[in-house]
Structures are given as C-alpha cells and as structure tokens.
Image 1 (cartoon, rainbow, N blue to C red):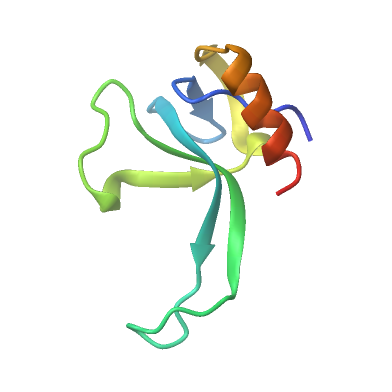
Image 2 (image 1 turned 135 degrees about the vertical axis):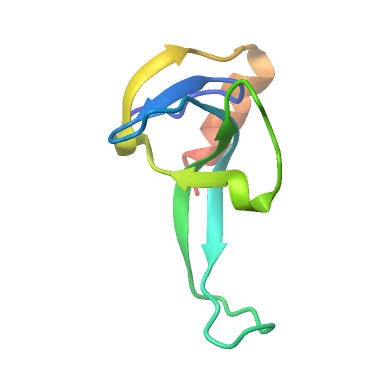
Length: 93
C-alpha cells in the first residue's frame, strides 16, 4: 500500500466528480447486524473525507474510502514531525 496522505489532503476518487478533503485515517466502519447494537465486526478504511470546499455538513455527507480509490491527489496536506510519527503508528493498524 502507498503511504497514507496527511489530513487536509484534497483528492478525487475513481468515478467521482467532486473533490474530497481527508480529515481522518484508518477508520473502522462497524457493521450493524441488529440496529442499535454495535458488533466488533467491521471494515477498516484508509480514509474518511468530506466534500471540498464545503467541509463537514452532516454524517450523511462523509465518505470512507481506500488509497486505491484515489485517482488524483490535488493537494497534499501539511506534514511535520508529528505527522511522520503518526504515520509510523498507523502502519501498525
């Protein structure tokens, strides 16, 4: 897998026509077998993002996706020492 992009990165997904801004990484989407009851079963995604430039609107307008879904990186977010350390930790997830 390619190295995770930092938060704040702007990307376009395959089949998409609207840019997304990444605001979280390594997101576990829990499957609901019984409504109102969480289970340990779920799917891990590389990123969670929101429309750019709108930003967060509501949970219905947030999207989880994987690095392989990205066809274009429009802007790469800020990276510093803390980001480098976090990326190392996220490799273990």
